[in-house]
Length: 164
Image (cartoon, rainbow, N blue to C red; front, side):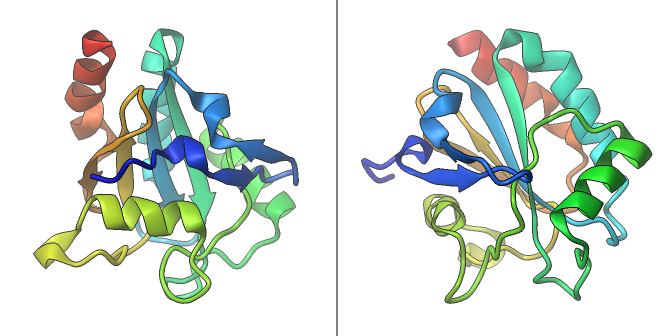
């Protein structure tokens, strides 16, 4: 684990505002690369349920649209925001579309990948809805593969919130 934390990065919201990640200091975070046209898209519902269940205790879900996997997030920021709100009632923070792998990968996702290896020890994000759990100190503590249902992450979230 490096000395860096997620608080060392800046991100852009889906409506174009620049936000330092230390805005989320002292919160447990679940950072997810999302897509609107993926077989896993219904996970938005579970992510929103997790967010609603724990947000009053210091938990945030942060959604980062990504179009790198079979072009499953082709929309504009406005279209993505509208889709998430209308279809899944998403209230958790959404951010500008990013690359999570490759040369143009967002620095935050390069960091997340480096801190927690994925399947077979690889650091690449495997697919949409890969989830990174971050503790209240900004350290990445766990990576969840795309098929992991948000409800299955609840015990890990609750544990981190209780330890704080």
